[in-house]
Structures are given as C-alpha cells and as structure tokens.
Length: 154
Image (cartoon, rainbow, N blue to C red; front, side, top):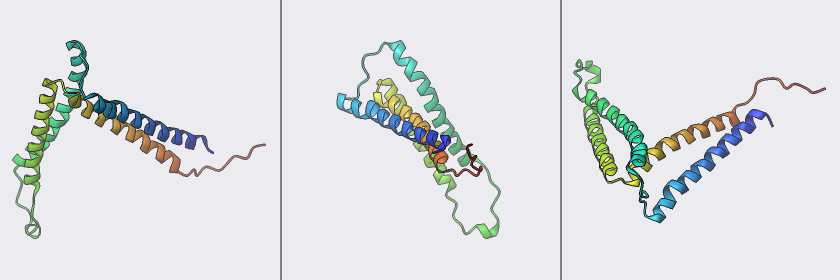
C-alpha cells in the first residue's frame, strides 16, 4: 500500500477518534454531571470566554451585516423577463438579521450566567469543522489514484 494512502487512513482514523472523544468529554460526560462549569476563578473563566466570545460575536456580526446590507441596498429595477420571478431576498435577509440577533442575545445571556453550553457549542462547532476538514483530506488522499508509473525494484 502506498505511503500516502496509509497517511490518508491515519488521518481518517485520527479525526474520527478525536471527534468521538470530543463528543464524550464535552457533551455526554457534561450531561451526566449536570453541565455546570466547575468553580473557576474569574481570570480563568474570562481567559476562556473572551476569545470564544470575540469569535462568536464576530461571526454573528458578519451575518447580521450581510443581512442588513441586503435589506438596505438600492437595486435597479430588473429586466422585464425576470419580473415575473418572485424575489424573496429581502425577506430572507430580514430573518437572517433576526436570527443572528437572537443567537447573539442568547450567547451573551449564557456568558453572563457562566453557562457551560454557551462556551461548549461554539468550541464544538470549530473543533468539529476542523476535524471534518482532516477527515475530508484523509478521504481525498485515500481515493486519489496515482498516475505515476511504479518503479520496479532490483
């Protein structure tokens, strides 16, 4: 078996194992224990909460900004052949603004309460996206066919 394919299998196994460990440690174990953050000093809590909060509020702010831009942009009237097609972009943008504001409000409320889930859900999203990328690269390595000729040994 080619070395690249072995690395692909290792990447897939590694990402699946880490994903399972993450789900167990961050989710299942915390559910069984009541999902409360152990008593942390204020400095330790804010060392965790501030970076996660900046990233989450930045992403939600970008989502709100996109929706707001779509809502407030002035567009030229469409061509006559496109007029019969309904355009729901403004309605979708309005709901995007509402949803991002609601999620941001819930997130900040969770931070004020020092909720475990307010920090765990964004951390899980980032972790699982990164593990998904490693998994995808592993699958791509495994399924890629080599077009190089095989070198025959002496």
